[in-house]
Length: 284
Image (cartoon, rainbow, N blue to C red; front, side):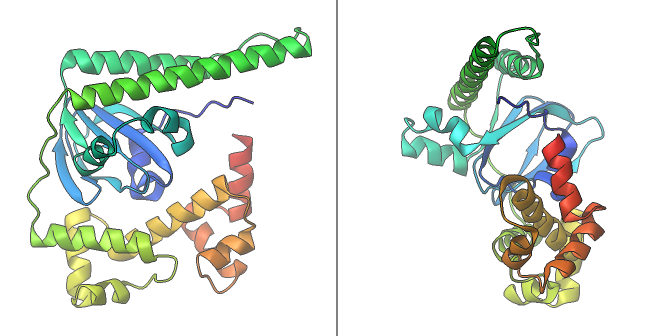
């Protein structure tokens, strides 16, 4: 069955939602406002018509934003875009990963938005087929699926075409504090399955926990402990939504002492139990 995935919202880039693009390709086109973002291991200042592309297992986090920040945000699984991306020279793919931001023209932005809207409209459209024979229903669904696939391919090609027509923007110079933050975020992503104590991450950078925590809060607006919880929850939600692992298996994967401890941790951060979260996602 063809399923419609709701458009992502700007708030989805907060740490407790889509901070790490696990198994995802995506892009963000800024249309209003300004933001300071962490993309990969670098920081960028973006404004109108800045296009930011992210690859699987890449950090994409809005660190600061103006109240009027708006734009379009799109992402999908690796397998969806593989037919489009696989023929592209590896050097060009590495360029996108290493230099992910470009400033594009108003005309290029309009072209992207038109295709983006076509994808969204096709995804939301429903076909009145209750009175059709079963084989016609299947044909209609197949046709819609093919249409969605080609529209996504067209959007992906347009994003890449626009990217390579422009010169990548340089990342902001990193201060010592920025380096500490970025190293911490990468380490949390790699180690939160095993380590959820601030002391561990402070020790990695040979800093006292107090000094380390003060830098993380100053540069990101959140405490180190909040970040650790947010990244752990990113993995927890991903496992619950996209895997067939049992809740006990997820608790083991994340190195919790037992399923009950994981359940309490999850409910503290999400406001519902893991089983309730999974059930709710199945009904979406």
